[in-house]
Image (cartoon, rainbow, N blue to C red; front, side):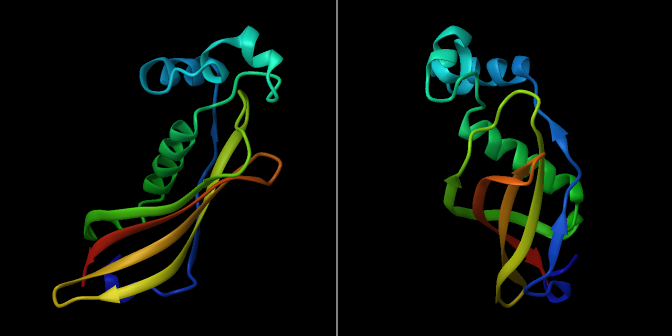
Length: 140
């Protein structure tokens, strides 16, 4: 989808993705090895009452789900930024994640245009777990 075809207010929904405990631990051991992500005994004694996914893991899965929608396709030139990232609720093993992306801003340039989406991630019970603004440069 080219920049000129994108409309502010458009909403796109992804499929869902079920996150496993093994995946949470494996990701955390490599990228964010805090106890609440890798040590089940300590995590059970924490305010979370169990292992939770790293926020970075949740963000990565959210981007994966957004990319699978393939709205921009080959018209995307590059990502230009992320801001206002909020981890609003913990993600537990067995949660089904899905994203909703709403176009919130467009800024045209000569040969391309920047589009900003509000990416909101929910888990199976409709509870929001992440919110972030992501921008990308698209072909005009």
